[in-house]
Length: 296
Image 1 (cartoon, one colour):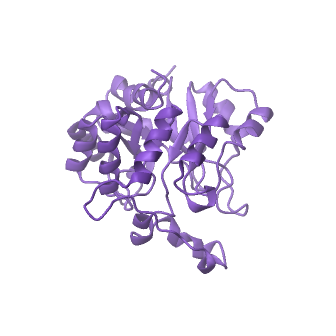
Image 2 (image 1 turned 30 degrees about the horizontal axis):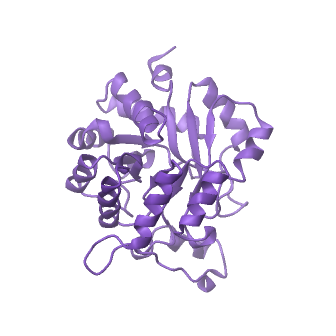
């Protein structure tokens, strides 16, 4: 077993998009039934399947019926308008269908629209995009405090033992969620997604604040995409925030990307070359995600 193989043992990818996302014309590199056996061979422990459009709870059973794997495959719901929006009943339904994670709105979030995130991509996929009434969900009141519906979402996640991802809401909204979750003793099950992305662009001081309150910060592989950060820079940021509250994931999405298992392996290797030890890589790729998912 090589060093890079060793770093994959027990790895958990908490943010991996399903094969079909926006269009059947834009398939991923490989469907799940092909790459899951490879993930198992590499020693991965689990994967959270996500979709911007639909709950993946109905997809996971069909995937597992077509492939035998020891890799845990967890479903999720992203609370965009197509899934019913930020509603505690949707959270409960996710849990009843075996889901493990909730994501707050992505393209239905005001922050995504203002920062030209995935909501801006619909023009290239759907001719009728202008007819989609995007609710631009926002979770702060006029005093900057979390609105009641936000607290209800946290309460529902806690009641059903679900991890809560911040999706594409602003980092300011995320801090409000984390503060409220800390009051409910549930901030340890919250993760601020892709904090280095242009949609979130969370300042390091805000990351530290989130970590101090017990939440996790997610760094996706595309933080190291060409023209963005380099691996020593990202590792330096990890150390500033504190490795204990960092999780890494693929946010596997692009059709040109390697399959999720290979992409994760490549990412972990880049982090090691950027300055993380083998043990530290295994912490942010395995031990920390396991804590976030309530497995340990």
